[in-house]
Image 1 (cartoon, rainbow, N blue to C red):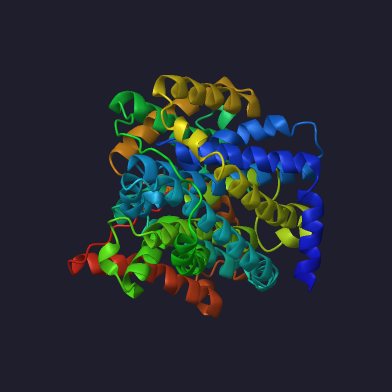
Image 2 (image 1 turned 90 degrees about the vertical axis):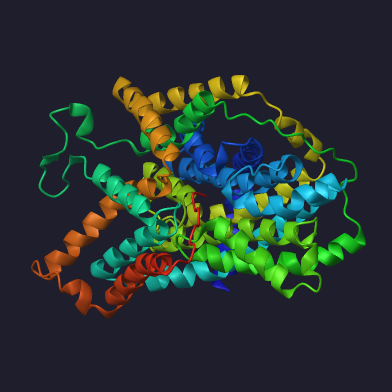
Length: 508
């Protein structure tokens, strides 16, 4: 019953007028981010971190952190909702986890059932959101209590597992993903060493003594990188948008999609808990499961309503499930949760086992706000489907200057440093060239966020063992984590060597 009591306190926080506004603004912007092809949840969240810092400037630190994370989480799961709109109407996924929705969503739209497909996607996403949040409520406290018992060696190995999980399943090449992970870890070492006070990789530049600003890197590689891609590759929409007529689904539609929605929600939630698997893989698995158990598998790919309901439910449940390792273990399992973690650290809030003890208002306020946000999304998406569909037609010439302006003003406002603006531009160019050559960005951000914590736990563990590295193998929990980490990287490589195709893109 403790969880229920904490949740009630969370609702008391989430229902404060400013937090209701922040939740609404978050889910609204998130839906828009999902609808506009090319922006995606990571870029959206990274772009809005400096905006939330300005909006919450006058609030006490704890309230500011709560309101900011409520808005940013709203953008995250709102983008998961919005991604289905372009998939169904334009045959173009709004973000990677909506790729599967294209298979049956667009054929439904061509049959004149675009409104029904969008409504089922919205209902499925709402149910999935509630399922994942119920799981979050019941698992958060027990998991954080278990995590509190971990030694520094265990924590170090758990974070290595988190890095390997995301690297092992990110992008088309495990090698490229690992290169990006190491690059992120190297960037994290720049600055003054907390223990010895020695300056590392600063090249006598005072701006580097405090390390690289996480926000500058995230906004640069994701938001500006996307801008350069749009400008240089003329990455605009050329497809024809399907017309929307009837929006409300029939009883038959609801009956057909009820099972897929529940199954998709459960698949997505449990997949989301596993770091590195992300919403994309969850939606693929949910789709394959429905096709496997369907009495009419031949309908899939030709406009089967289950082919929209299952993947859309799965990708939203996965985004809720991904919050569990982030909040309880301090391990972000996806690129977006890595950016969310960076935002929390900016507000001096450390995600992990102590979060629920030290900052219960933030933890439970966020969980409660996700219930409210999901309800807002359902109310928003059903009647405003046609309005969001219009947003798809926004020309890049209006969108690009807006993204550039938010990026520059936002990054400058954090430290009021021209150096950060130069770094932002460099990160944008580097981000564009890396993405163009299939180097995934999520592992880089994860390495940057987890780097200082990995180093800290490594040092603490070696201090207790007098510099003996065998402590990581002698501790059974640490050994288990390290074995799983090695398997996570080696199994896909072995499968590739045997000629099996292993391609999973986990940027979300």
